[in-house]
Length: 322
Image 1: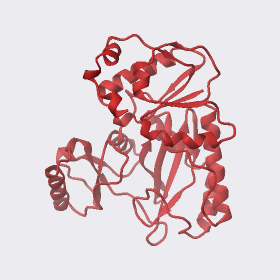
Image 2: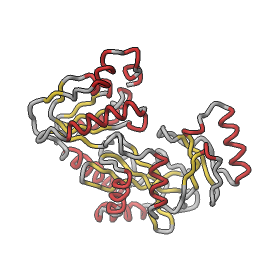
Image 3: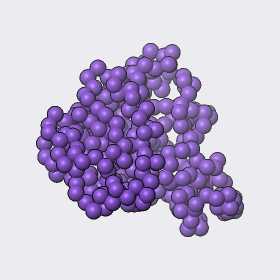
Image 4: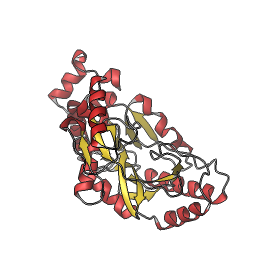
């Protein structure tokens, strides 16, 4: 069995996993459940949504993560809540490691980036940037002041140096790679007439790009460097998003709970349909391989802080959030 731990509102992200004919038994459970359950069924537990937990919640989740991994056969936990890097920490580490060519700065520290343009994004949420591209220091200072005046907490904002390249006039391409335990596999790419490339647009590129995509999927291109990025982030399950700039992968973020997609593509190009089906099928296989055989449940941890969480409901807000 596989148990995904995350908020109720993200149940839909795993719904289509059940479309896979070889999908093992899987369930979605909340952190509220994890903190309150007395016994843990044998399963692989995938911790998601970690960037939204506060330090106390991450500490409790981290204790349970360690407990699960000490229970032996039939139990496994992925994504240590106390070690995974948030968006800012990851980008900073990748720049320092020489993986990325662009740097990131905290808005609260009066940043002076060495390269422009830049844009501003929240650290704690997987949402589009708060700004378009900012051209220079004067405009950056002004925008940060305006965001603060509007009520944005600066300690949750990061200033990211722009690093992307068009693949055709006005068109950008985003790559991604999935990790499921020890397996890293390339996803199909998406294209958009916007540098943010959030959702993707259908068939806006020359079909020759789909031929190159097929080669990349066949070779599992960039899986090695993506695996290194996951290791730097200390993330054992998720999706890493990146682009190519002058032939070098530039990594932008890792999503803890990427949505499962169907193998059907709305593209009109046969090669693209094959690419999408291949990538999705491989991801399904890799996640299904995380399954653990049925075994007896084991007691959850005994911990004073966890007991307080369970009984002093007025001192925590997890039931409302999760």
